[in-house]
Image (cartoon, rainbow, N blue to C red):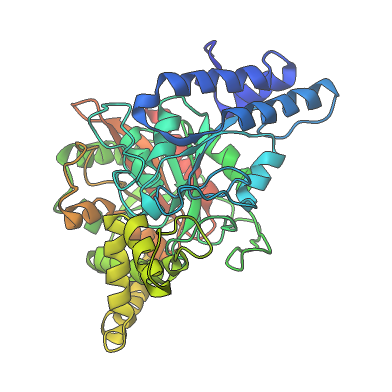
Length: 473
Ligand code: GLN
């Protein structure tokens, strides 16, 4: 343990607050100071200094009154700016929602509040979570703490930076095609994308509803799990959230699949080497590693970008200047108002996706694009089901490369989309996956391993992630 609360784990923070060794106010204050010192990394769009101090004071009052404190008492968290906190601006990284203040809040926020967590800020992200670097944020990109000239990954890059840079103990993101796991890998922290339906999305601004899931960042697997345990579980306000039965007990010795398609062309040699080492260590601890095949992986990016754009074009139709956020000045008529509002309010990538999505859903093209993508999505999911008949989980890289330079892929959307090559299929299949640091490149950049599980077996993939974490200590 070090003396600054910014360095503590979830458990250390809670214990110290409970024992009265530190006040929640002091733990929060230390993080707010750190946030101010580190503004150049642009982790947050809105710093919630006043609200955070109030929340912390409330916890300290409860403790003084002898009331019981929650499992996250006094733990400062970063919240991606597409998750609603009542009364706090929610921009989604977009100009169109610049001044929008939500009147209600997400179920995950209610649960975290109930557990005693403190929200220190709304973190930066790609506009409406569309992107892999945070460079699509209207509020400027976040920077990777390992090298500020490099991207932190995205779209939940701000939360990853905040956690990696000690500007929060843990954080929330959303993951539609990799947006928690990719920035976790590039910033050297843990990122969990739960099973579709494991966490309520009430109060998460929708991007692609058949894929979106709220996920967690932590510096350790234990921290990640502590936050996940608070936010998981059925919520009657989200019709896709699930009631789950007790999980299958995890066998001590696991059979771990090594999907050949995830180690092919395009994978950085250092990352491959790091994953091979990780697999060898798992073998040494008694697990079996066997090759498996997911033959439809090659269609993942194509299928993902048809489905997510189709859903986005529909979900984003609501931003028309009438009910939410930005409205263009002095339009001639209603249609003109819609046009100008959307032209001014949305950035290039969001416009590109709305156009693509509208196209693939339009009469005459619907079956050829959207219909076909849905069928291939089923084939991709079936590949996983077949693999899970013989293995307990899968081990893959999270990202084909380490953090690249800011600006490097901004003029080439396809190159940018390929950053998600190892993560999107998991959303298409609705599975849980965690990215955990497994090595460092020669240039000092973090490398992430991805462990993919059967539906609702988060505990199993987290236990594998914990082993990978231990091997590195
Ligand atoms: N990078 C992917 C995209 O741009 C995934 C984003 C996400 O998971 N929100 O769509």
